[in-house]
Amino acid sequence: MNIKHHLINNILLINLANVGDVVLSTPIARALGSFYKHAKIDLLVTPQTAAVAKLFPNVNDVIVYDKLGKDKDLLNFLKLIIKLRKKKYQLALSTNLSERSVLIAFLSGSLYRIGFKARGSQWFLTHTVDSQIRVGQHNTEYLLTLLDPLGIKNSDSAPFLNVSTICSIPKDRSKKFEIVLCPCGRSKGKSWSIEGFTEIIKQFSSLGQCYLIGGTAEQSILKEINKKANDQATVLAGTYSLTEIAQLISRADLMISVDTGPAHIAEAVNTPAIVLFGPTDSNLWGPRKKHSVIISCKLDCGPCHDDAFCQNQYRCMKGITVEEVIAHAKRILEI
Image (cartoon, rainbow, N blue to C red; front, side, top):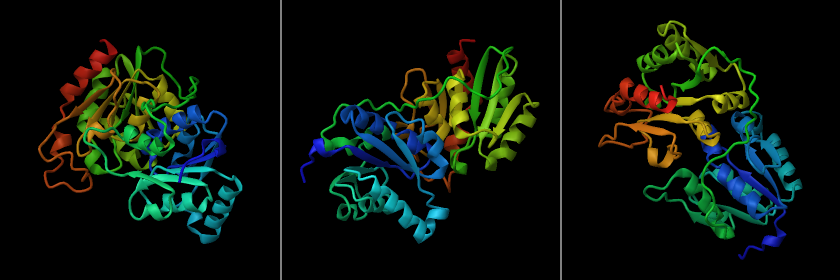
């Protein structure tokens, strides 16, 4: 089916994944907005990522699909589909490999439906692209291949968020700089040591204000780190909204994080970051701006992506030394 671009006035971009995945899809929204200058672009996301979705470039409306909550109910799901169909989309893009995302694209009634070829998706989509990731290909570049059927090429693959320069999180103006620390990944295998983050706070807290960020589930770990660091950091565990955390990261001079959502936010708001990688692939998920640093042990067993269970006791993360992290931080902060 040939795509008639002049028919496209309303676009639906579907991303039902986690915060980092959603941030890395911002180049698609930017490219679509540049190509279809008069089209309205809506973004369908989960409640967990709605706040960051509102920071997307070129997005008209953010529609929330509570796939684990109220929209599990068939009636509410049908109400969502009716809402989407009333929007009269001509183009829908599914950025996920999940059947659910592809099904929603199909049920939206969109004239053109684009997604990755996987799990029978070709039966619900009008155009598919190869779901295989090339060696060395970054996730943003992989997602941009969804635009191939539209003939949109050479798009900027750098993630970007429209974040306000105003931040409600208090700042200690007696300090020379701010460091945001994100110690916990979505699984144990991605997380670095409590001792490592403790030493970083001890090293820099006399000159800089350190923030420990995470969700409410990580509160006990963040408090333990801070206690061992003599309570020199500010613990933000579910205290502020994701929008406010993005504003804090944008204001900060440095982000030190494991491979998780806030690390991608740092990349999208142009904050220098030191990102610690273990079981996941830094070529696929890591920051690419010159002022950021990837630290990884590069073991023979990795990247394995098996961050839930490891026969090698997570040597890839345990092998990252605090001395290396501190040395890179001092260079970035110029101290």
